[in-house]
Every structure is written in C-alpha cells, then in structure tokens.
Length: 270
Image (cartoon, helix red, strand yellow):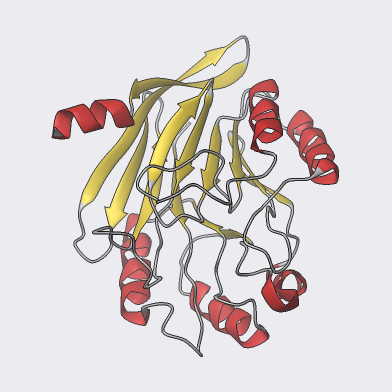
C-alpha cells in the first residue's frame, strides 16, 4: 500500500478571539498542499467555542486544502450546541471514509456537550464494532477522534483522557485497528499498544503552546516496506521522525511492526 495521511488537530479558529494564529494557519496549509497528501484528517477543536460564525470561518478556510478532508469534532466544537452545527456544516459526526481499497478511516465524536472530558459510550461502541467488522481484514484500519487514548508525555498533569479508554483499546485489539489518530493535548506523541499505533498531533494553529513546543502537524506515510510517522513544525519547517513501522500481512490481516519508536528516538537525542 502507498498512501500519505496528513494529521492536523486543535485549530481553535475564532473571529472573536486571539485563540489562533492566521499567519501560522496559512503557512501550514501551504506546506500541506506542497506534500500532496491523499487525505487530511482533522482530529477536533476546529473552532474555539462551537459558535456558528466560527464554523462558517473554519469551513471556508479548510476549502484551501487541496486534498479530501475528514474532520471530527472536539470538546471545543461541542460547546454552545456546536455538535449540531458540526453536522450542518461537515456532515455526520460518525463516518467511514474509504481513502483507497487498502485504507479506511473511521471518524468518531468522542466529545460531550459543554465539558472537556470525552467518552465513547455504549451506543458508540456498538456502532464502532459493527463498522470495524465490515472493513476487509487486509485493509489498514484507521480511527480518528479528538480525545487522547493514552497519557501524553510533556502535557502536564493527566486529565480528560477518554473516560472509557480501556474499552476503546480492547476494541482496537479485538478488531485489528492499525492506527488511532488523536489530538486534545496540544503535544505530538506516538506509541504502540499491541498491534495498534496511537498518534497524537500537536496544535496546528492555536496560540496555546506548551513549553517550547511549536505549531505542527503529523504526516503518516505508507509504502510497501515502511510506515513512517513524522512531525512537521510549521514555523521552523523542521521535519522530525516520531516513529517507524514495517507493514506485514499475517493470516490475511494488515499489521504494523515497530522498527523505531519514541524510546529509540529519545535515546538517540540524549
């Protein structure tokens, strides 16, 4: 399989507040278009407060991306009845996108109205199970949601991890999910649980940056021999490797085997 996914998150766009940097946003969009991805996945917090005017602004701005865009809502998008506005502007909050015969993206709404924590919930678990059953075993299965599935280093005191993260991880293992894309904590990270790679994106254009982190996005590139997870810093234009995997097919199921992970990268930089 050959494919390129751009993963962005936490835009926090608002015409009312200085919650985002238009300059960084436009610069990031130029960099994304230069990469010519097959799909751009946006894992939530597109808006800052879920207001109609914010959604209108976001919808207009995302049209500048020259690739198919798959957005899912975050906790900020669910504020002020924003979960309803999301559906009016972007369509279903739960969706399946067939990027190619070998790559399926399942979008989930992990938010709850007017609170910061997230959860999948029993009904959404049932929907996810049924959806994953229908995806061919030889295809790469990617889930996109806002709330982080695993605690993220460098993000401060842990809070707001997905309430039913255990059930979610179990579903990923049971149905052979290869990739989970998350946001929420404004810190990039990649780790592997069993056969599932979990990737967090930093913030694409928000002004709320942790420590010395920079606005960034992730690029996941699939080839026949390698799957690489790379971090692109927008303002510095630096490219940093987060992880690398080898794709294999076991008993008809697509799998990612770790070649290089965050522990190796930290040792190299020590």
